[in-house]
Amino acid sequence: MNTHGRRTFLRHIVGGATATAVVPSLFPDPPRDINASPARLPNLAPGDGVDEAYWDLVVGQFSLRPGLIMMNAANLCPAPYSVSQAVVRFTDSVNSDASFQNRAKFGDLRTKARHALAKYVGAHPDEIAITRNTSEGNNTIVNGLPLGPGDEVVIWDQNHPTNNVSWDVRADRYGFRVIRVSTPPNPASHEELFQAFSHAITRNTRAMAFSHVSNISGVALPAKRLCELARQRGIFTLVDGAQTFGALTLDLHDMGCDAFTGSSHKWFVGPKEAGILYVRRERVPDIWPSDVGVGWESALKNGAQKFENLGQRDDAAVSAMGSTVAFHNTIGPDRVEMRIRQLADAIKQSLTDRVPGISFHTPSDPQLSAGVVVFRPPNQDARQLFNTLYSDHDIAGASMGGDFAGVRLSPHIYSTMAEVDRVVAVVASLA
Ligand SMILES: Cc1ncc(COP(=O)(O)O)c(C=O)c1O
Image (cartoon, rainbow, N blue to C red):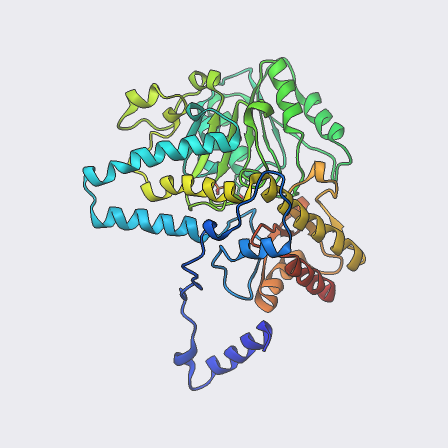
């Protein structure tokens, strides 16, 4: 019986006399393969190629519900067994003994996680704060930069609310101006994107804040070029990396931004409610902290740690950030990026081939996009299609509204080419 048939069957029984016996649990046990661990993935040398059989092994590292096609990485990702088990192990340890003595080990694990994260994103450990998510990192910069009347901040109109509405709220209070940059729909080149920002800069511009990749259109900005331009003019740059941290190989020193934010629970496939805030070493003293807590004096001596003075943390989640870097390194961040791009490109290409009249907010050029694909279905309301995909076909995506109305699909390394084919066939049958 296919998934749709099974659901219909369940619905019928639920309506009948045996309803209580078959109502599915709200929290069913996930499928478990307790032997799954990155150690079961073959050791690869740099440059080794991988095939579909390899990616099937990677899929086996995740506890996804059988039948579900999960293409919502831009919003939230599952963590692989090795990470979720680390979280459980660390949490159990705290629950078994919450003494200072037993918890001391989490200090070391946090340091190890910070070092691993720094290497993973091309930064120095003193430039990394382990935050709770991208929202917190963005707001730390928005609230921490000293700005006032006469100052201007240039932002992208495709930013997430934590990087545009948050600037508006702050500007209302402190009297600076927020300038919104619009970029051409479905841009054809980096140049068009670059010029839009370049024209918005004046001699009053103090900061420029933009998403590395937009969550609403999937457009990727030329971050390095924009940061270079800003640096030449003494303008602070905040790059929101929610859609690239964990998806693309990053070298933040090479990118040249002043601050970069990301969430662990998105493409990084890490523990929930954790994230990173990178602040370039020279810029740390320029940013006021949002939170001041116990251990402030020592946090002040340790670079970006001054931005994570948040009181009691979920030590398990913070520590498991290190386990997540280990997971990425087993596969290789360049292979992760390659696979995400391969899947996203296949979605764009196959939908174009098979769905007449379909259009995209996301450019097809890999230079101008990454793992986020947003399309406008030809004959259907996007929200309705998003709902039907999940309710009738077990396909989880997202729906976008406003100027970027469409369905968003964001596949990850736990997605397969067969799933891409299935999604495209379903969209084609419904269009
Ligand atoms: C570009 C961007 N920034 C920030 C966020 C906020 O992420 P979080 O809820 O993990 O803080 C998101 C979430 O989708 C996003 O796409």
